[in-house]
View 1 (cartoon, rainbow, N blue to C red):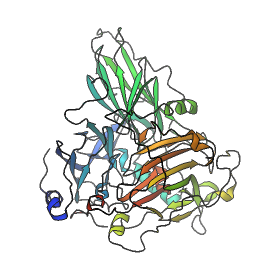
View 2 (cartoon, helix red, strand yellow):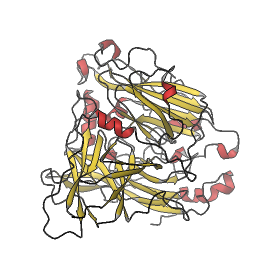
View 3 (cartoon, rainbow, N blue to C red):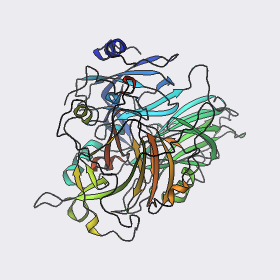
View 4 (cartoon, one colour):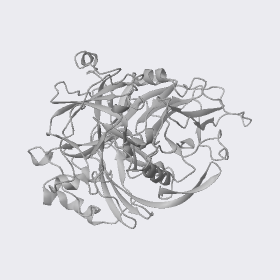
Length: 574
């Protein structure tokens, strides 16, 4: 789809000459154009019609198809009734934080009636990523897949599938989820759980009024299908499987893995998994694809429903019975199954897709993850624990979003927007994972807009440490601007003397969202070779709202080609 030559597009065309920098696609790649119209649309789910925000009237939104190294230009027109931004989840955006998308981090939001042109610069990504709104809880319905094929002249590192199918797992609320967010922010209490999980926007026929809309995938016996699975949900890890069919996992987060075959996967919010499905049932039939909540913390209320879609053999006889359900889909609290699945993820490590794990570390960080409380306003009682307000933190800093974007403040040297003193370790140490001992005095946190500044080229190791404060649980931690290696994970408290000896420095998974295990830790490494301002946060959206976030600022390198690009001319204003 073509777009008008807006000031931002004209800036793209002139940037090479005027600025001495390249924003063109890689040699042999293409520039692809899309228009995204943010608009309200009516959708009926669970027997009730509701008005929701969509892109181009579609829910889920349109899939972006590209090849490795392409440049994708997306002009977003906000025809809705509220501010919005779009994030290109898992796209590193080399030197281009201006198009990354999180509101008040890298940009001011696009106001109703406004528009902004995003430059989505693809580099090393190949596989499945996704895009979503990065403002309030808008990504409930404003999201879609990004499919990145190999460059022309290259191919998949596995047999080419007969067909590729995006499978977007999500959630649905009967109520307006942003109204629920506003109420929770007013009271300081929990945010109401969703009413259903969904597969490609549909709850499936286990829910009322949902049979006719159940998503169906027609298959032919003997063919291979590539399922591009995305967890776009706001609050649930999910188990996913297909009755009487295996899944061979071949990729995660836009990077290939060593193939391994399983009955089910566990996928955290923000993550993607590429899985091959062989339509090998000689007797044909109909089979449920099912997505069930995995809840690691039994002390909080969750939507423990199961969404379904149907895999149908088209060469079967017309008289078909009801679909079979996956007999081995794990239960809602099955942490052993989740752990066993995640442990199998390994980078492919081939000649065409090499592994390059940094061996020497320049910056080491231990970051504790916690749900906390903040005091309620004087003479008031809030809806959180002990009458306080719910909060969340990293290293006991509960992130406070500023009223102007951090990227603009950093670029223009505006003082007073953020503090460059995010700590490398927690302020106090204790038995972080003692789930039987959670004294009230550990609940409190403090607000602050603290960022971590890193020199260009430094190798950073972050160990995320879950804590038992107000309940231990898994946390999907996502870093913008980088794909990192998940070099280690374990249960209990991280031991800096012993645990590094267990690291996988040969073929660790290459991801942008890591599932930190309940009452455990996960270690990641990355090279800070992408100058700019990059958000890091839990991908449970209630935790984002509560403050489980921080920002990395990677300084410019010395040469022009390792400096952050200048801003485009049409950046939204606050």
